[in-house]
Amino acid sequence: MTSSGVFAGKVVAITGAASGIGRACALGAAREGACIVLIDRTETEPVKSEITAAGGRAEAIHCDVRDTRAVNGALSHVTSHFERLDVLVNCAGTMGNWPKPLSETTDEDWDLVTDTNLKGVFAFCRAALPLLRLSQGTIVNIASELGLVGTSGLVIYGASKAGVIQLSRALAVEEGPNRIRVNCVCPGPVDTPFLDRPGAAARDLEQFRRDASSPTIMGRLGTPDEIAEVVLFVASSKASFMTGSVLVADGGVTAHD
Image: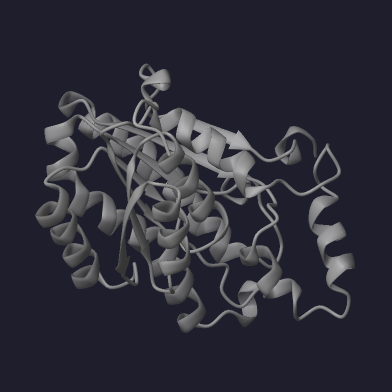
């Protein structure tokens, strides 16, 4: 870890930090000197250990983003331990029980997906605003290319991610006078446990992964590190004139019909 990186002296909070894109963002920001707040409903101690073993600083907070009281408690922990917050990355998400047509979707399916993917982003943004106003910090929300295009079997997932995109744009306008930047990153299919969980139910996991990568121009899945590079760029001072933007890193999925 370095004391002279682009996030030196900064506090970066990341939801969904236990694995996948969130973990990659945490490790990348730590390498650039940030103190990392790892937030997840599952175990983040392995990521914390990885950061501290390399000389960095990290705190782990257990939190289900669907629980507003837990979200507020997580931000209270940040306030009491660090007295500041410079970057919030909302990465926690779920696809729920997919693929499933809307005609077979239950209220429970809807609540699980929208409460995690959209309400969780709303709750963390709201709770973090007092600290971010003090630091003139930045928010990066992780949406999806499926928030930009329609896909059969993923109606509620796409709707939740489209909501994240619009929440990000509107919040950028609202908090612009407070010098808070808000941007949104839309990954395409990425090689993470998030993708493999539904794929594990398939008869042939490797075929499932090939099918997932086939819509990309590059003919492969993205990597968590590739998405983290985009997230960390837009969160850094290198992107100081960017706010209200939607950055697509989808291997070209949305470039063709």
